[in-house]
Amino acid sequence: MNIAIGTTNKAKTEAVEVIARKYFDKPIFTCVKAASQVSDQPMTHEETRLGAINRSKNAIDETGAQLSFGLEGGVTEIDGVMYVCNWGALTVSNGTTYTASGAQIILPEEIAQEIRAEKELGPVMEQYTQRRDIRQGAGAVGIFTQGLVSRQMMFEHIVSLLIGQYLFSLTHE
Ligand SMILES: O=P(O)(O)OP(=O)(O)OP(=O)(O)OC[C@H]1O[C@@H](n2cnc3c(O)ncnc32)[C@H](O)[C@@H]1O
Ligand SMILES: [Mg+2]
Image (cartoon, protein in one colour):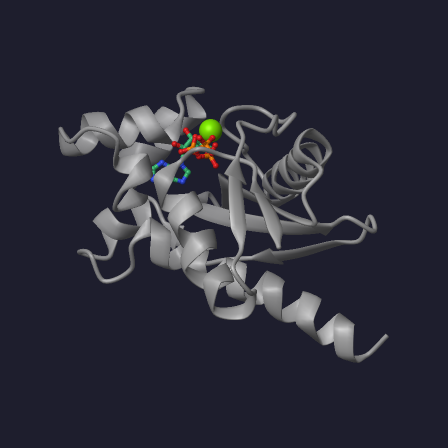
């Protein structure tokens, strides 16, 4: 099974590979920097979800794979409180696209103010933690849960939700 992943971010590619290996026979993964066609810092659920969908569609177009995954992180606000949010999309070569959202967690106000000032969460997290490449490791979710839930773990859950929908469709068409 040829599987495309619309990113080279390790937290995302590892999440897809760990979960997909459980459900597909000898999967072959191709990672491509698929365009999200949304801003580098998605600011709503709608924008984050669209970024995931676009990545999955662009990745399958670029690779000709049988399945492709798009995973996108963003932020959203409720009553003036900012959350990091996460969305995933799985596109099948027949054109069907499944979507699912993942964990959301509150961002400290000092982080939120930086994002409202149009900075990207990735670099803001590096500044806040004085650690490099948080985005490919613990992630904001990992930092603010004291390591209990890493960004990869969070994306593994989304990938399971996507593959589950695909497997359900195979038995209920
Ligand atoms: O290479 P890609 O796939 O683009 O990976 P990315 O880390 O840039 O991730 P996204 O584009 O999906 O996320 C949009 C922005 O939000 C940041 N972001 C989202 N969730 C994050 C998290 O948990 N920790 C750190 N940065 C995060 C990310 O670094 C980007 O600056
Ligand atoms: Mg990005």
